[in-house]
Amino acid sequence: MIYLDNSSTTKPYDEVCKKMAEALSLNWGNPSSLHKLGFTAEKELKEARKIIADTLGKNPEEIYFTSGGTEADNMFIQGMAYAKARSGLSLITSNVEHPAALEAFKTLDAERDGFKVTYLPVDNRCMLSRDAFIEALNPDTTVISVMCVNNESGVIFPINEMAKIVKEYNQANGTNIMLHTDAVQAYGKLDVENLKVDAMSISSHKIHGPKGVGALYMAKNAHLIPILYGGGQEKNVRPGTENMPGIIGFGEAAKILHRDFEENGKKMATVRNYLLAGIKSEIKDIIINSPEEVRRDASKLGFDDYYSVPSVLNVSFLGTRGEVLLHTLEQDDIYISTGSACSSNKSGDSHVLQAMGLNHKEIEGALRFSFNEFNTTEEMDIVLDKLKAAVSKFRKLGSFR
Image 1 (cartoon, rainbow, N blue to C red):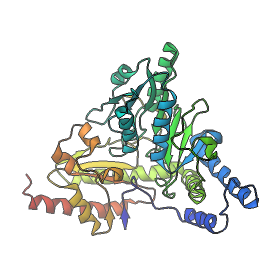
Image 2 (image 1 turned 90 degrees about the horizontal axis):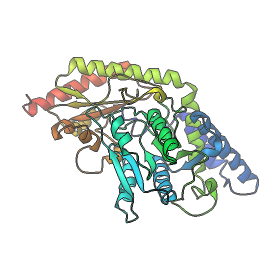
Image 3 (image 1 turned 30 degrees about the horizontal axis):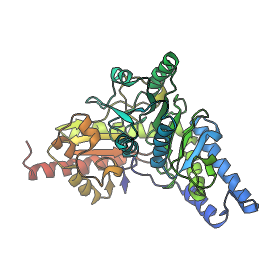
Image 4 (image 1 turned 90 degrees about the vertical axis):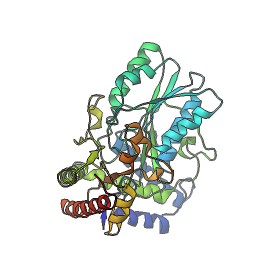
C-alpha cells in the first residue's frame, strides 16, 4: 500500500496504539476521582498536556484538550466572539478556511446578534492580500481567525506578519483584537512554536495519533464563553470527562513526531519534490495549485512569500476527473484524495480552488497528494507510473486535446 492521503488522517504509530491499550486496560481511572486510580489518570493527563505544551513552546496551563480541531476552532471562534461582543461585533477570516472555521463564522454571520464577518479573498496563488487585511481592521474588530496552512493548496499564510499588524493596530487604537490560527495542517510539519497568536487549534489524527482528540492553545489573557456546559474539567473551558486513552495517545504521537522533527520534514520535502518533478516531466497539461517551493519555518514568512508545507501537493490534470483517477489508483493500492475529506460529502467544487479562480473543469481534475515521513521516492516512481497511465487512459476515452 502507498498512502498519500495524510492530510485527511494518518496511521497511528505502533507506540501510540500500545499506550492507548494500556490506558484502556490498566490505567482506566477518571482523572477527577480522588482515589489512586484517579490520581494515576491525572498524572497521565498532566504529562500529555506538558508534552503538547512543549511542542508548541507554551505553558501547560494554556493547553485545553478537545475532541479535535473542529471543536477547538468552534470553541475559540464562537466562544470569544460572544465573550467580546460588547467591545465589537466585527470578525475577520479568509474565504479558504477549513469548514470547521468557515461554518462557525457563517453561523455567527447568520445570527441576529449583529455580528459582521469579513471574508478575506485570496489571489490565484491562494495568498492573502496585506492591503485587504489592513483595510478589514476597524475599531469594532474583536476576533480574527486565519489558518496557518491551507489544507488543500498547502500554502503557508503569513501569520506572524498578521500578528504584527494586529499588535500595532491594538496599540494605536486601544483595541484588544484576538488572533487565532487553525494550525491543524501545520502542527508536526512546520515550526509553529514561534507563532505570535492568542490561540491555536491542533489535532491528533494528523500526526499519527488517534482520532477524536485535539487541543486548543489559548493565551492566559484570553477569556472565552464556553460553548459546552457541565463539570469543571479543563478549567471550565471544555467540560466533560477527558478522553484519557485519546489524550495519552495524542501526547505519545506528539513526542515521537517531534523527536525527529527536522529529519521528518526533510523526508517529506524530498519525496514531495521528487513526485512534483516527475509529474512536471512526464505528464502534460497540468496546473500546479500548490507553491512549488517548500519551507519549514512558518514564523518568518510574510504576505510577499509564497511557500508550501512539505506535506501537501495539489495538481489539476486537465481533461480528467480527479475522482476517477482516485479510484483508478485505488485499484493499485495507492491512496490519494481530491481535496479535503471534511468537504467530500458536500456537493459542488472545492471552495478553495474556486477562490483561486480555477474553473469547473480545472477543479474537477484536481488531486491532492499528502505525505508523511514514511513515504519514499521509490514509492513515488510507482505512483508516477500508475498516475501517468490513468491520466492517459482517461484522456483517450474523453478525446482530450
